Image (cartoon, helix red, strand yellow):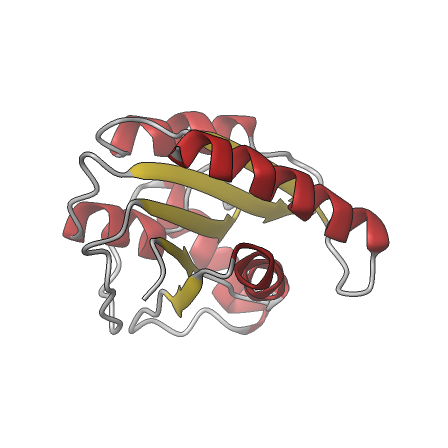
Length: 159
């Protein structure tokens, strides 16, 4: 078991892809945050934004092994400049006090500044490191380099 756990929520697969790449770089364990609600398709996208905006709680269908990890990295898309309901549910279910918590997000243009500020307020000790990626593509060497550099930042934060 690795000292680092990456948990991610992904509606379209972009955040999953980034999480898998980062897990390989850090030799970290990775787990998907899953929820009961189906958010696929155009209607799922609209409802997802609304649920995020009003901070509607999600019902998780996944369990996660946050103990005895030293660090937890949370991956998520940006929804209405906020964390998705499934990520909010994860953060309320698991005690992350005393752990280094980092967060990354994927987005189509809005950025992650507001999302990270809102997420940091939910995490007991705030966020140790963040990374926002606009429209990441699996075969992009710039993304790979960005993730390698961020992995170094995460390692430093965890020392």
